[in-house]
Each structure stands twice: as structure tokens, then as C-alpha cells.
Image (cartoon, rainbow, N blue to C red; front, side, top):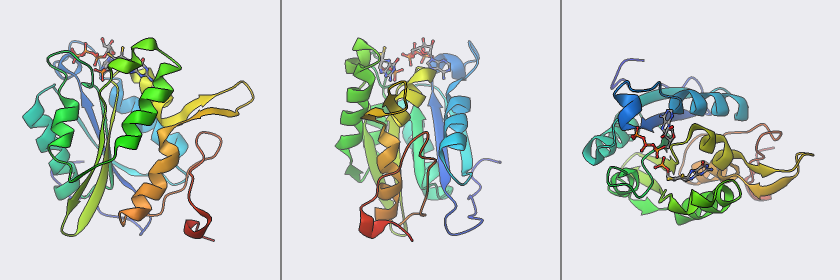
Length: 207
Ligand SMILES: Nc1ncnc2c1ncn2[C@@H]1O[C@H](COP(=O)(O)OP(=O)(O)OP(=O)(O)O)[C@@H](O)[C@H]1O
Ligand SMILES: Nc1nc2c(c(=O)[nH]1)N[C@H]1C(S)=C(S)[C@@H](COP(=O)(O)O)O[C@H]1N2
């Protein structure tokens, strides 16, 4: 996909997803980026219909992060943007500030739930300052969510924690994403319940 090209929906329920991996070292070629492949793999498995992706690998620079988020939402038309990396307390970790700068409304529940989930995996989950926002333009809106940078944290936060029998112990945040996208006027998306069961109120479930 070439830069700056608007994604075109193949059908009304086609989900347009922006993926942003934020890492000085992966962007600088010190190590191979695992963020974008992990996000693509998880969404490919979790969504009932394959989405369209636009992916960006960028360093931890606040202006560059904000500009990338604006490009993905306003120019490419993404409904959902997932970032990975740069949410910690280090001086170069600026993803939450860059995300809040382009949001028109904050969605604090996502950050709260992700920290709850992550605490089941690592005590340092408390160090992640991840946020989520809605970005609204006159004709469009998108949900933008920060995920931590550890590639394994992507599956952990999106999918949550299950026991050996597959019973959900802590719900992953993706359970709430389809209904959020409905409410902001985006496509109707469905998930594979084995990975994550999307929750919608009965009145919002399409028959
Ligand atoms: N995009 C990525 N691809 C592969 N591994 C990553 C990526 N981002 C982070 N990691 C791994 O997760 C660890 C913790 O992530 P964190 O974002 O805190 O790294 P970091 O040290 O700030 O990375 P960087 O210096 O590249 O910005 C890293 O040390 C690295 O091993
Ligand atoms: N699910 C999950 N969340 C996690 C982690 C993890 O391994 N799994 N690592 C934590 C750590 S060690 C840090 S420093 C913060 C911030 O990471 P980031 O700067 O890479 O975004 O995320 C936290 N959240």
C-alpha cells in the first residue's frame, strides 16, 4: 500500500485498520519489528472478516506519532488505529501524549482495563501509561488505542486472560471494540468467540 492513499471499503462492513509500531530501535533497524506482524496476526485470527491494514513503523517522536495518527484517520480513513510501544515512563516514551494531542474525546476505560489485564501477567504493568481516544472529523470518527511495546503484550491486552478450559478470567479490551466502532458510525464487525467474544447489548446485535 503506498503512503497517503485512502483505503477503499470493499463492502460497508469492511474494517479499515491503522497499525503503528513505535520503537526507536525497531525503526532504526537495530532489531526487527515484531509489533506490526503481531498485530496483523492477532487481528487476522480474531476478526471474522479480514480487515484492510495500513502499517507504519516510526521512532518515539511525539510530533511524528501525532502526524501518523492524523494521516491514518483523516487521510486514509481508518476506523480503528492500534499503536504499540512508547507507553512507559522513560523520557522517550511519548505515545500517550501524542495520542491525547489528536483525540477529540478520551476513552479512559480501555487504559484502565489494559492495566488490570496486564497486572495478571507482569507487576510492571503499572508502568504503562497507555490511553485510548476517539478522533472525530466532520465526516468520520476513529478509535485509537495504545498497546504496550512488548510484542507478547498485544495478545495479552487484546484477548485477556483465560483458564486452561478457555473460560475468560479477565476480559480483553477487544471485546468492547466492535460496539464502540458501531457507536461512532463505523462498520459492523464480528469476532471469532474462541479468541475474543465481542459484547453488544441485545438491541445492537444484528440478526
Ligand atoms: N517493535 C518492537 N519489535 C520487537 N520488540 C520490541 C518492539 N518494541 C519493543 N520490543 C521489545 O520490548 C522491550 C520493551 O519495550 P519498550 O517499548 O519499553 O522498549 P524500548 O527499550 O523503549 O524500545 P526502543 O528503544 O526501541 O524504543 C524492548 O526492549 C524490546 O525487547
Ligand atoms: N500485557 C503486558 N503489559 C505490559 C507488559 C507486558 O509484558 N505485558 N510490560 C510492561 C512494561 S515492563 C512496561 S515498561 C510498560 C510500558 O511499555 P512500553 O513503553 O513498551 O509501551 O508496559 C507494561 N505492560
